[in-house]
Amino acid sequence: MSAYEEVYRHAAALLTEHAVPDAALDAWYLLEHVTGLCRAEYFLRAKEQIPEEWEQAFFSLINRRCERIPLQYLTGVQEFMGFPFAVSPATLIPRQDTECLVEEAIKYLQQYEREYSSGARVLDLCTGTGCIVISLAKLCNLSYAVGTDISEEALNIAERNAKDLNVAAEFYLGDLFAALPQHEIFDLVVSNPPYIPTRDIAGLMPEVREYEPMTALDGAEDGLKFYREIVQTAPEYLSDGGRLLFEIGCEQAEQVRTLMLQRGFTELWTGRDYASLDRMVSGVWRNRK
Ligand code: GLN
Image 1 (tube, rainbow, N blue to C red):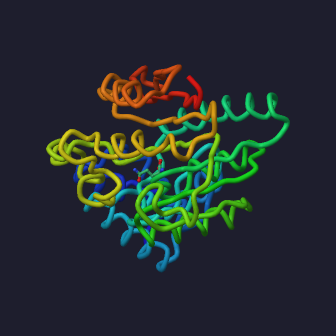
Image 2 (cartoon, helix red, strand yellow):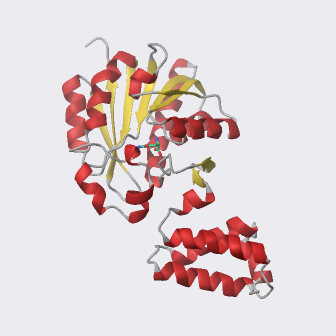
């Protein structure tokens, strides 16, 4: 039997030994996950004995974190735009960078609503946990919200997230636009597709490289495979004046802009993330030019 504080310190030391980033913080999150104690309660009880089954459950998670399994796959959740999203090893873990994409989409959707006095139709390609389209549906008035993904397991998680967060979104299984059950028109097509060039994957941190789904990361030889496919087909699915908004790798802005310009998109825009790196590109589709 050990006290909470001993258990916590031992766990943080184990994580540090295994070079886990933010070891002290991760030890804390896992302790909170197992015990349900908030920080104040922990400090009140720090010298009390921790129940045996909690100690065991905690160290079994700590050991898995030492193997560099991402924290979120152990707790099963990642907060995104202030909402708790269920995650699993079948889904990419939602990133803070992607919140910038959602913020940008919100600006456009609010402008759309002011202009047309109705909600926009939104399609999210490669939806994963559904974090983008579900957050948009929570924060904006949408008339139609759809996500597609190539992974059935990911879509199950997206559906669960939509249900838990009380959002009416539809999810379809398949390859990008081809997943849609019928040909439909959207005012905003948004996507955070896999964009890492295959050769760069070996250099990623072990959490990502070994545990996050390769299909959600690998953008093929130059990382641009999905941008090419989406840019090519999107005009068939966009309303006149509709917008295509991408998250991109920080060195891909020029190439993605060029793809969009060549396809006939106008009003190209590049946006940065919280680290001031290029992280988004968007363009507008006009039917009559
Ligand atoms: N759209 C999801 C996200 O942004 C998944 C993206 C992906 O799988 N590449 O988290």
